Length: 86
Image (tube, rainbow, N blue to C red):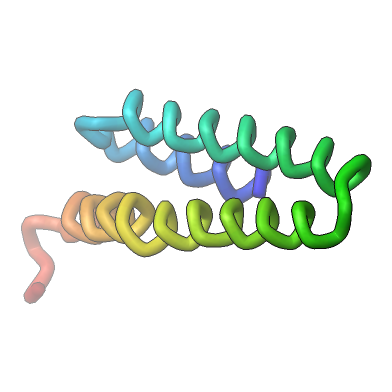
């Protein structure tokens, strides 16, 4: 996750993604949730741990589906050269 986020943030910086700060904040929030999940997994009952894991999974999938898709679209647009037939 760290490698993915780092590479994504480097790409956004290179493309001059206009809302990079908000996306970085989203990544930071995911890492906070992951850290909380780690504590729960190490100390909680299996039911609580499973619930927390499902919550994190949904947050991560939502991020990929919405925010990362927006970044990917921006990157594709920025990567098209003026001479491209696209």
